[in-house]
Image (tube, rainbow, N blue to C red):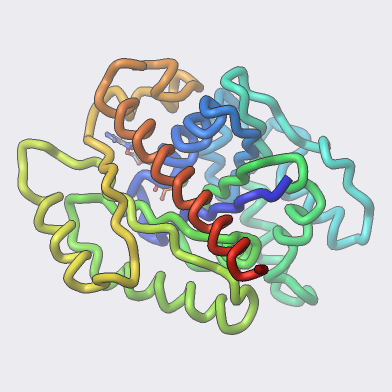
Amino acid sequence: MTSNILAIANQKGGVGKTTTTVNLGIGLAREGKKVLLVDCDPQGSLSISLGHHQPDELPITLTQIIKKLLMDESIDIKEGILHHEENVDLLPANIELSGLEVSLVNVMSREKLLKQYLDSVKQEYDYVLIDCMPSLGMLTINALAAADSVLIPVQAQYLPAKGLEQLLQTINKVRRQINPRLKIDGILLTMVDSRTNFAKEINALLRSTYGSKIRVFSSEIPRSVRAAEISAEGKSIFAHDPNGKVAHAYTSLTKEVLSIGKQRQRSQADQLR
Ligand code: ATP
Ligand code: MG
């Protein structure tokens, strides 16, 4: 199985990374894909959103897995993986991950620990989605080092110019030094308010600034209280409000992501010819 590893990243907080990880991940599972979601944020929001309301009480999380790698211990591919009823797997995280990040300072190959882990489990999955924390620290670098591509959620309300520039610089640096095949899938506008024109303006600004270099997904995620409710429910928008506009938007994003994957496979096949 060739898997696609996507990092959902933006160092700006509260832009919809976790919500997108949940709903794109479960969207892909609904299309028959085998999906692993990796919580790479010490806040544990992804783990909480998938129904683990006390992530600090989980015995095995990403932290224990990385600690095992650091000690050269072998890892069972099912270790720490939790299954969600909407057919996705989860490797959870909790606050211990922030202690681990600090302790990585003196570790050899510290940027590649998550990659090392995913290399051993990715054959089990079609898609692996990594929910990044709101920073460009070592955990996010690990996610970018492990990923095939990045999806960047941007909140439609704010001009993202500066923060986005910094993220793109980090992506370029990771490409140069660690992961040359890292691609940018695109920018996803989230929390789009249909009563304002912000999204249109920001969309136009992004297109004029990054032009042909970076895709802006044609699917946009509308702002809706229904989307904000799912984290407490521990389920996706497809289970919570299947006929609403947010479910519709995440279905359309899922289709876009699948078609990017197909295009990429085709062009890789062409290159091999
Ligand atoms: P962090 O940087 O803290 O990890 P994040 O980028 O993962 O945040 P989310 O946690 O997904 O962002 O979303 C931030 C807040 O906005 C949450 O309370 C979430 O429920 C809410 N939210 C996400 N998407 C929508 C939406 N489409 N409409 C309304 N509220 C939303
Ligand atoms: Mg989050």
